[in-house]
Length: 107
Image (cartoon, rainbow, N blue to C red):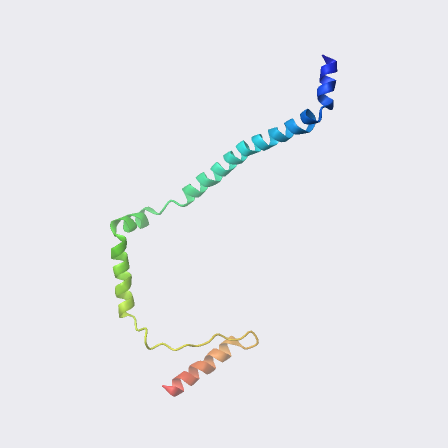
């Protein structure tokens, strides 16, 4: 019996292959459990506030889109002016003040 054990210990397949297979197969089962815990935690965090959920479920999506469309129709989108942001070497407040004063002079 001891001879057979010594033979098995010297066999490369038993010495390196079996532990490798155990790690791969056992690791996949272990990772499955850990990822399941992660997804369960995300599901709990993503639960909506009851007030918000009631609001979302009471309106259909087309109603919400219609409300947003009405807000955009009321907004004045034609009379805006473009004020560029400062360059890295410029003082942001100073350059924006200069642009605002130029705009007020022209209008």
